[in-house]
Amino acid sequence: MTETAATSYDCLSSRLVPEPELRTFLKDCFEIAEHELFVGHADRIADDLRDVPRDVVFAAFCAYEQQVSGHFAMGFSVGIEGRLVDRVGRQEFAERFAAHFDAYVLYGDTEPAGLWTVVLPDGSRLRAGTEGDDDRCVLYVATAPMPGLPEVRVDESLWQRR
Image (cartoon, rainbow, N blue to C red; front, side, top):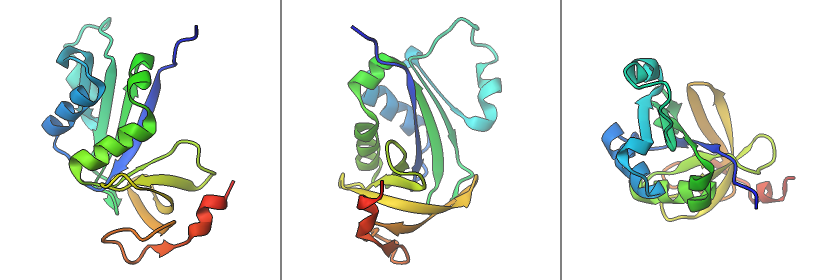
């Protein structure tokens, strides 16, 4: 029997989530205890971990940043152990986050190059194209209308791209 490999769920959220709410969500989502989770701002990780013994291993390690602009308010990356991947897959994680925080969530999985998946609060999924740089991300095309973003062009043919 093979073990599931550890991975990282990298996402952008349209809603800025305060750290205490993010922490509570991650504990509940992955069904882990407080001591198994690290959550910290990407710019302060070294300071936050200064007093943590080097041999401590977290089942889930989340770094977030709030300097994202465009159609998104924050970015975050959650590194998780394989056993947590088995509990909550990437798509399910994005769906839970979107519903819980009433946000749309962008993430990448198996889409063709240059395209992403966007999950809406109601759980529906769109394929989308973005433009921007490290601190700015704007949706310019999606497979269905984006609520609140009438400027995003609709192109259903994105589903056919391989």
